[in-house]
Length: 222
Image 1: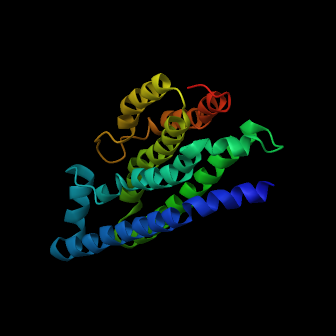
Image 2 (image 1 turned 90 degrees about the vertical axis):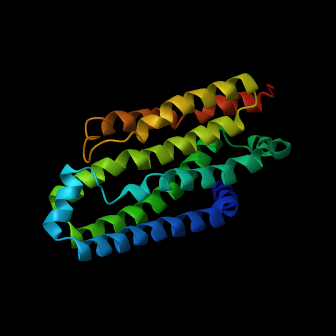
């Protein structure tokens, strides 16, 4: 039964997952093509100085990539469930309804995580060719909230799309509009270090919020 549920989720998102991962790889490739170009026209020490002290990070093109990937996968996964309330078919299976919702969310989260890990591996691997650890570690610290924002977007979209009551849906949209900018505020390289643990905890809490919408959906509230 669980394999069938997971396979159904995979059928919904597989092309979106593949395209999103390809986009992430292409953006990572473009970043380091640009880095190589900049190295040719600047001495390494001068380029490193620009990154560390002049606010010219080399990774800015990554900023919205996790959000775009999360939007694509979450809409592909959850919007079809609202067409003629198809998700109610899943609720009639001889499986706990909350477990079904959490399995759907866990599957989408893992797919996002795989794509992000591919991107981070490429980003870190190429970074080691051009930069010292004094730049790479702060860079990883700076992009961490961008990846957390991808997970937050995924959970918010799931929450909003499956929410059957419009007043709650509007409320969630307002909360998302206030909450998400926290992850993508402009900041100097490495300055997000104190905030990352807090943002991580907030995303973990948000990850179970789908149960609220799922409860009202299966009770038939409108």
